[in-house]
Length: 477
Image (cartoon, rainbow, N blue to C red):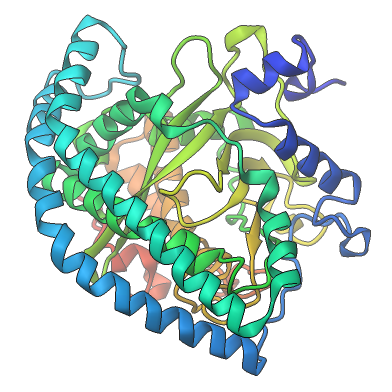
């Protein structure tokens, strides 16, 4: 039977406009699917339930390039931070005071920010207040580009890697022409509304400052730098432990959408989400589109000063705007798509360049024990550099693969708790069930298997991601 996301009801140009796609990116992903699904090389196979083999480049050249990258990064970022960070934060605050007052008008449990007259008035006033900070952000970005070219071309000239630079540039081509952020500023305001309702004004203002000042450099210079690195297409995937007890798949997907897309949570969930070190918020698209810009917040829980926002372009699988539900699903282990996130190269405010899906999974041939879990496959541009590709690296797909293995059990706990609360169980009963079924994985490249002998929070003796976040464990009101 034809699946909902495969139904063709509009022409290709209309579908791409509705979904926020580009012809080059779609051609690339369809070629990947035709080759098997893992990469453009048929030899890599069709198993999207495990990571692609990706050995690190331990050569002298790669280590020298990494060292050059770190030294030049320090030479530029240290003086930049001293000059920009305090003015940026102070210039943002008036707009955030207005935004916080707008958030206060939303009732807890509000699913979607209506783009009414009140919304547009608030958006215009906030834009005017943010204008000086916006000018500073543009100046910061332009100077980042200047030093990116200066340091990058210098390295290329002294190493004579012209052909390698050309090949790396080609790897980035599918992700160059995404929807421009400047044309979607109302989406950013909606997403900031939801994030402020989750974390509060000062935390989000600090995270936004760090995004504007640091993320472009980490994206273009450190993570996917064709002048220093040999770039290619890499696949990694994370799948949660099974959630077959949260059935059917559509119900599990709807709970996940509520957690991630709801504009303003009730206080209990808002307090828990605020403790997470990764908070994705993908607001529902406005009428006439199936995609919208959203925001992810990342926090290093051991160092609260290290936190930042990231802008993403998200297509919502449950949207039927424009009389279309069609969208390309690249994963071969997808049971039901939920979100499709494209991290465009022309989006300077996310450090990755990738096509990402979030779906209910079959578990695939390699992890059938994870059937009905949430899968998070990622097809991205990456080097094999130890600095930007390993599980303990500074940035890149490897460290993100490791992080999601760490964070996803916490998300599963909240999904399971919410499911049982919706089913009519008390807070105590729902929390006890979620605690008893908590399970982490052996995080590693390839396949991260569930820890079979540790099921239940009490089995971790305080050494779990859930405990790291300080989330509530006691079965009390």
